Length: 338
Image (cartoon, rainbow, N blue to C red):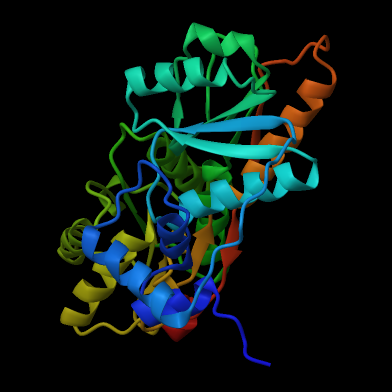
């Protein structure tokens, strides 16, 4: 029997993620995918004989996900996949509506939903943040996903950024490290503020003084990580371990450490954050923290289903934080091995 081609097969043939293939083949609106990549995916699908399933009329109650940005990022895929799976299991149809962070586009989406009608709304953000909601949202049961508000009684779910970096830092301390640096992002980003709190809290818990010389804030890019490591290397008492705001920063640290003749993890332990698709292919594979986007989205849909089923029940402005998983690989070593 001839095996039918899958999205994974197309992704492998094109050298892109399965999320990118899904966005192209489903013609998702608002996606930022280059014409060349889109053409490559469509050509590969045609060449391999991939056929999308015919769609039939679906009369399940509709819930809408309003999200400010849709990209080929695995974070977006996690949010959409988790919400879609939970909606399907609970007997709902999920419609994803990108707004590109545009107020007029959001208003248009809400006006369109009022004509359908929709049973409820998942209001989502790609990056964790506080939001101000349009008054029209009061017309539907609403759950906030990866965002929150302080002025309306709406449930929300966000990642436990503080506890995640605290866990990462404690793991370095447990490996014997006390000179632990933290390379963070801009303070304007909520995740950045929460994660540095986790770093500080872990040191305080183990009675290790916080050395501000070991804290570098800046761009959360490869270049930012590279530049931050150079600054740390200029210190008289250098760190033996580094906790990074994201995997891209960690990649910059890897590059700068290699230039300095240092071996990871023999000379330097490194932990990233995000579990990007390339982190397992870094040399050595990067230990990192995994954001719980899929579980967050599932929680949001399940909570929304409860609200739809009990419309008169009071729902408090309760923010749920889901724990991040540590993906242990090969970039951390005990201090006696450094």
